[in-house]
Image (cartoon, rainbow, N blue to C red; front, top):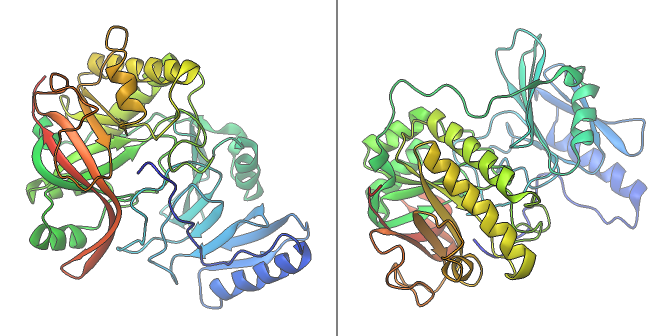
Length: 415
C-alpha cells in the first residue's frame, strides 16, 4: 500500500495531552480494566509520573506511561504490530484484525508464555529487535525498536533481563528439513497480500471460496510492522501442499521515514550499498528458515517517495546492492514500488542501475492486468511482473474476513 493506513485504536484509549494528570489517571484505570482480576497480566501506575509498571506472569516491566497495554487473552483479535508504542501481553488469537499493510517500526513490547529455563537476551541489529527469555513463570519477550534503542534497553533492564550482555543474534533460523521448491514463488493469476499470515483455518476458507491462489507473506525487515506469530516453515509447507503459491515481501529500510504508509515511523536508507547487502542477507536467512529454497523470488518493499536527486541515487544504490547480493546467495530479486516513484526511477536508469528480476508495481486502478503505461513492453516481459491493482479492501469468504490488497501475478521460474 502506498498511502497511510487508518489509525488503529488499541484497547486502552488515547487521552488529550492538554491534561497530563487526568490522562495518566484515566490510562491507569483503563489498563486495570483491560488487565483485571483473574488475568495472568496486571498493570499499575509507577511512582514516576512518566512511567508505569506492567506485570505478567510474575515479571514486571517499567514502560513509558503513554504506551498502550493490550491483554491478548481478553482481546485475541487485536493485531500485534510494532509501528505503535504498545505493550502486548499473551498470545494472539487465530484471527488477528490487522490492516492490509502496516509499515514502520517504533519501540514496543510483546510478552508471551514460554518454557524458559533461564534469563537471556539476544539482539538482531539488522531487524532492530531484542528477544529475551526469563525463567520462573517462563516468558518470551520480543522488543523491537526504531530510533530509540535506549528506551527498549531500559524497559528490558527494568525486568532484570541481562540486556547489557545481549548476544548478537544470527538472522533467520535453522532451515527446516523439508522445504518447498523455488516454483512456490511462481504463479499466474490472482493473489492477495495482508499484514500478517492468516491462520490455516482462514486459508482453507479462502482456498474454497475466494478467487485467489497466491498470497503475499511478509518475511522480515526492519520496517515490517506485524509480528507474524503464525508464519512458520510448517505454515509454508502446509499452504503449498494445499495449492497456495507465495510472493515473499521484505520491508527493509525505506527511501524516507515518511514514505508511503510509514507515517514518519520508518527506518530510512542512510548508507545504501551496505544496507542493501545486509537486507539481502537477512531476507535470505528468513526465507531459508521458512523453507523457501534458492531460486525463490524475494521482494524488497519500497514505499512511495518523491523521486529525484540524492533520494533516487540512494534508492538505486540500495536496491542494486540488494539484487547483487541475492544473486550471490542464489535467490532471485524482486522489488515492490509505485508507478510514480520506483518504477520510473528504474526505467529511466537502466544504463547504470542493477535491475531486479521481477517488478511488483502498485497502481490501484482496479485493472487486474500486468500491463501498464509506465512499463515498456520490453522490460520484465518474460513472466516477471506483479500488479497490486487494489488496496485496503475487506473481503469475506467462508465466513472469514481479512483486510487485503489485491494483486495480479505473472511470475515464472526463469533464472
